[in-house]
Amino acid sequence: MKYINVPAPISLKIPFTNKKALIRDEKGDRPAEPIKFKEFVLTALLNDERFMKNFASLTAANKILGVLSKEESVISLEDSDWTVLADVAKNPSAGTYGPYAPVMAAQLLPFLKAIIEATEAPNS
Image (tube, rainbow, N blue to C red; front, side, top):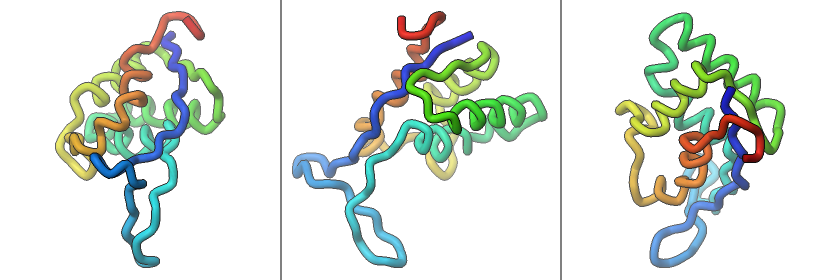
């Protein structure tokens, strides 16, 4: 079992200006809301092709989604599920959200480190 201490939400900033990053959509430009850990995992990691390649990987993604839905400060994952998630965090596939865009993704390092540095016991 691996335990991940869930980091606080992160507000993306524009480098060198320290202004909030903007979201552009049908409503126009607006400041980006802080990104929660579970949103990052859902959009940036679980969309990786390694979670789509077979039944075992789809099952792992489903278990991770279930754990993230609980809104806990520490989440636990089976070693096999954590291994896939950590591998994706370390080496994302090319795709919609990966590999990472360094200018903004560097600000999300606390999320990646929380996954990669998961512990064998809660809060250790």
